[in-house]
Image 1: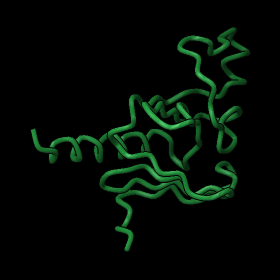
Image 2: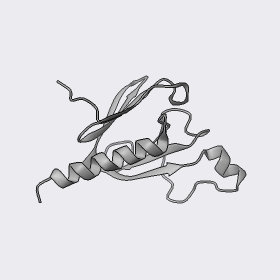
Image 3: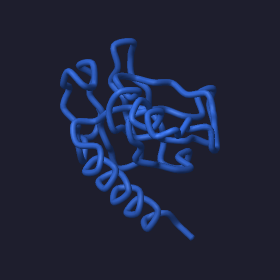
Length: 120
């Protein structure tokens, strides 16, 4: 039985009708192709990023710390989140939750609580 999400970004047109969820110990992407789960202990970094198009217009090619990425939705065109992982075949995921700043804040809060509960 799956636990209840702590926070959910509802599916909208900008997420291509996909839903993104934060649980007590993992981040879940409910995509058109199935579910992708990333345990918190595999998340290296979370960044808020402007649209790739907006960056290009300013001359920023987004090449700093480049990694091939899985883009789940309209991340090239909208403000989005970038999650870097430490394991698995996919090391970077770009996605566009309904409210990117709020989603990032809720994810960081859930991760902080998760790590505080881990035995030392």
